[in-house]
Length: 288
Image (tube, rainbow, N blue to C red; front, side, top):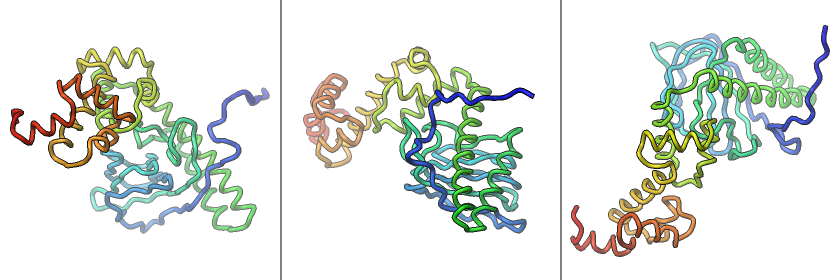
């Protein structure tokens, strides 16, 4: 039987100084009730659900998923989600919540990048994932210092396995170019106020930045950064027309970190400064 050695040069997902912290874990019983929660979010913790039995429809981050046995649902912190079952049947699940999850390049308590599918199919790994959840429940129920530490260590293993499954799922099921282009556009539309760069968008979709730029321009007609800028300026126009917010606040709200950059971009795209645009619109000098 061969020996297998660890690669000690491999980068670690979790910092040794900050390990994920298990807040709660449970397994619903055979008489589980229909999940009662509707649209909500948790700003300070990550939630993981493994469906053991039943079918449901879940809306996570604005995307709808039909879910069933063997599906893992990842609720990143701050992401709106809605839970409902179908056919009047209850869902039997494992559930856990955690905080102190800090992965390089991601906000706190987010396991997967924005734009990634929030439902992961266990496939052949279902038995292993079930075992890890079962051990966490068992060890937490014992409520000894040693068992609680064991449960915390199992949590880290579980989260690493889920990230691995998510990455493999993306690799095994590549999107067609039209689907990918639309998903990139949707991602920019939803996240335009954030500090987006070509590199950060490419990282979300696990593709080369050059390929992303070429694909997007071919399908949408603008480069990703041109589209982002137009999206921001378009939203700024709406805010100038329909609100009395100061120009500086509007610039920040649509994603510009510097007022001068906002003025220059607005002037170049619209043909006048933001303040003049608002004034002429309300005085009726611009066609509505």
